[in-house]
Length: 354
Image (cartoon, rainbow, N blue to C red; front, side):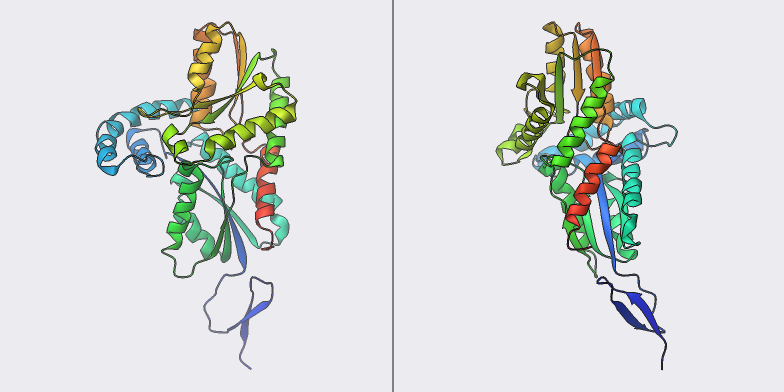
């Protein structure tokens, strides 16, 4: 009788292959964590490549191409790489020669792989960036090569926006278009009101505030902004941010004015969601508020927008306008609380596959 190769299929039942059949990996489940992106270095050309990919995305900049491309390839990509490079240099992880976002996202992937190890090697955990490296396409190919017949994609954005969650999903399905043997794919939904996420935020804030040597008079929940025009077109992002803040405020038992929602990181001449974080910080200081803290619930990991824009520039604005005590509350990152959120989402979304 001819010898046969035995391999486990997705259901766990053995697949019998002829002895001369080439090896085929199969029966595994991939989990791909995806965050926004990062340049490979802070110098001009790596920054230019990263910014061009990011700002060429029609989900990010919805202006007509005929209007936006001359601006992008003219003044924006001539000037902004140097400015952004200097900002990244201030928060760069020089020990590992990478951005903090890459460091944290890799760690989130590694820690998730460790806690999911009980699945007897059937689950492959990996991570990717929507812009820059490692790319979504390269990781989808790698997971398929590892025998992943089903892949769960987890965009690490608690609140849904077309410019974040949707563009990750676009890139995933774009990769599928070039695959002859496509894996089955699920995409995790936003988790802005998930009890595990709200609890993790609350515990992180309680711990961080408890460690301060002052009690903030006002606490800002600063979310990344989007243009008002995107909101008017039906993007639910603003509503998701407000609900996160409300649930967090209720969990902490605070009055409404103790935690205020603001929006940061606006770009270009359009009107964005308001109130703006930088203007609010300045006005609070001018109004005589001496102590504030800022938390950034929309970021699953600290990055340029939290470390440089809020912890750095935000603190400077507050102090320059008469404020005295300023605190930045870190994102969930790869903390115990942050990993509990990611694990909860992944285990729930894998239901029926395991």
